Length: 345
Image (cartoon, rainbow, N blue to C red; front, side, top):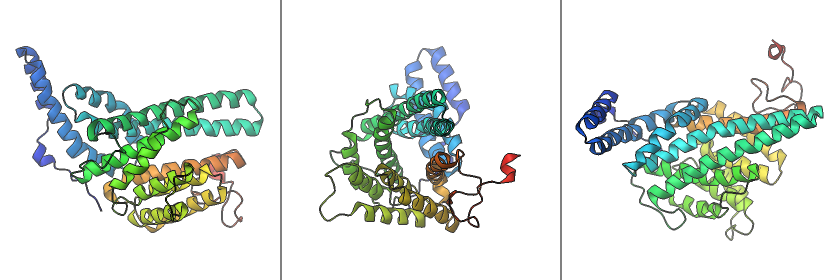
């Protein structure tokens, strides 16, 4: 399994040192040179310490908040060092999580308004849904843009990915490109080039799918389902998606299931969507998340829970009850209890 090492003892990074460097530079009139040095320290710390550490947390909300807070500061370093684009992939993808969460919440509000036959509330919620997906699309597209800046245009061949960190950044950037297109469609704004999807499909072949939790295979197979006429001869996208989901379930990083569910949603197969949610819940019980990549597995859980919430809300007016992830309102009564007195307290 790929592992991004954290080597704080080799970095000797110090915020005090950076502050002193900046102060000396300003006093001595050598600000450009000192900013370069400070930028090098900060980027080294971010890549070798912060990024591996953030992957180990299991709180997507914290990851999204970090992206919102840190992205402007990290991107300002691009003036002095092109390495900021590498960090930009991570930071913009983290920030996009916030907008996605807002979009999902507004979608639930929209569903509840429909159930109440409250047209004004439904219309307002729908406007907010589109706005939030537009923000998510912009941030995901920025991640794709920074991937292109650092590694070269995806789709034209495989870049020199020299480390597991480079491979992870490449993978996240491809996910950003695919999600940017999907989010843009959901926003109805049509500002993200659809041609990105085909380039993502080609670029996913640059990674070892088995090593990266089945995600590269899942990305390709999802696009085979969603884009007419691109399925290679002899390939079965649904079989490939199941293979990818199985790899993710066994590895403890269940990201591939997101793309499997995305494909099922795109063709309106609710029975398969439900089964994927059940499988995801069972996989979480069978195996703990990979400790080095807990954030990614937590993100996968949040995405699948969001799909479950949408199904529950459309049918019952409320989201997935506590402890009921992997079950549904119309299951047998001894399988799921849809009303819990604790939920009323």
